[in-house]
Length: 116
Image (cartoon, rainbow, N blue to C red; front, side):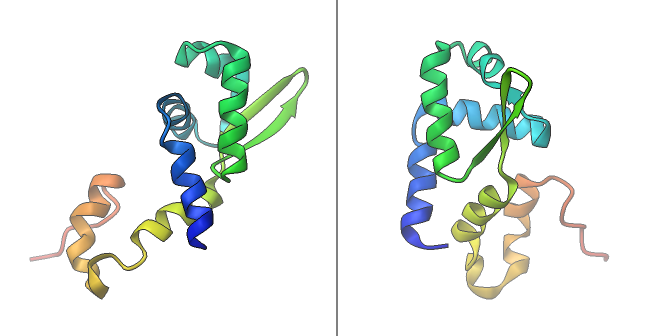
């Protein structure tokens, strides 16, 4: 990932409403939520939320799909993974064992304890 692409992702998340909406959609996974539901959950007018969601889509962090009359927004797993990888790709100078506590905090249970 190029620095300018990563910067766009971080800039999108640097606004409180967008960060709250993104975290809500991360919890929902690929099911996503309708734009109106997101606006109500975050307590923001729907037209304002639509603008925030468009920013997150343009940053590659969300994707949208139409279901009937609703637009459903969901976390874009590839874009989110790319941003996290960019942030952590050289973590701990090639000593992955030093990063286990960080990874376990982000993804509890992902790193099995070393056998004694």
